[in-house]
Image (cartoon, rainbow, N blue to C red; front, side, top):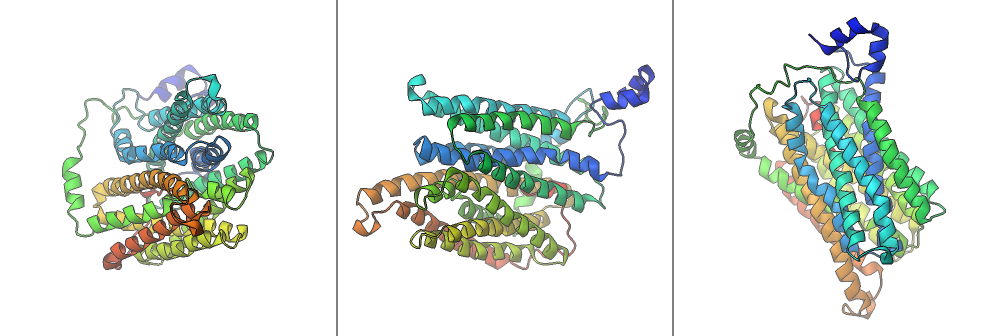
Length: 473
């Protein structure tokens, strides 16, 4: 007997429906209001992304004078945890519980971890701003722990949240649900970037700390509202005695497919190319072009707008049967133009050209991510789509994390050499180190295009529609 049935005998039904944290029945119908409420966890994820990769990395590099390589390692820590998303999704699929919840425990745990990271962050910034307040290692260590916890939390929350949305959606409304969830993520990114930009127009450390504390509280509020009464109890499905599947044989079958290795190589190269600049874009705008903290934080909104346009365009092209790998190739080409614009912005001192390049990076990266995702989905069998997406996400996240760390280290080393005159008097300029990294990203994009070329046309998607477990992040 369901707990809801027992409860309804003890309290009036209308009262119990308002009090219980679980849905009282499973239904194939998914009202727009319910899925919109579930999608609120995407707002907290977008807000965390802007804080980590936008505002905090610029403040730590320039205002707090931390080495770029150290900050890049901190920013990359959450991305390096992302390959475990496949394991998190698998564990939520096969969660053992006498109560009957599968997804809610993971959403709640992820929310608490994300809140904990944001709660630690202000104290880390205080120690970084006032080195005399503690040992020299305490500030960077605390900041690294905070970055890692926020990353672990948002990856756990998002993975379980998307899985829950998959459970609730039907085959007919699943494409619309995917669109709503993805758009909500971008709204969280763009809206947070704009809000932080306005709030930090008059920058101070106290104001920044208040923003971080507010983001921590808002994370818990949004995620609690999102999961409330979404998942029904099903003790039979979470019975600890139920047999659970394994991974090894499924992975062997997946990687044996003839396009898998080349596609994963292209994903690694392209993702590294689009993400190596994550730690550098805001400092580049501040140091080379003289942009304010508010101005560089607003770049996340420009980048997110490019991503949104790319998603809408890709969805339209895929629905018409376009080859997903061709769409990914278009993304690479736009990326070439984007990085060229960012490079040229320094010698011509054009902030407008720089902002345009930032938007094109988001647009090209969005086309590439969605195109390669759709192609990866075609590799997996019906019973192993989650594994195919897990491989896509693992390669993408690992490549992004390593690229960000290497980008920051390269900026430090090359910048020191340029200013010391080791590269000659002509290259004795702060913009040189950034420019070299952007040139290397162009080379990576060219390599990704070469890797992608032979398999373009082999993954036509006329019979394909997006599924929630195929959601790009």
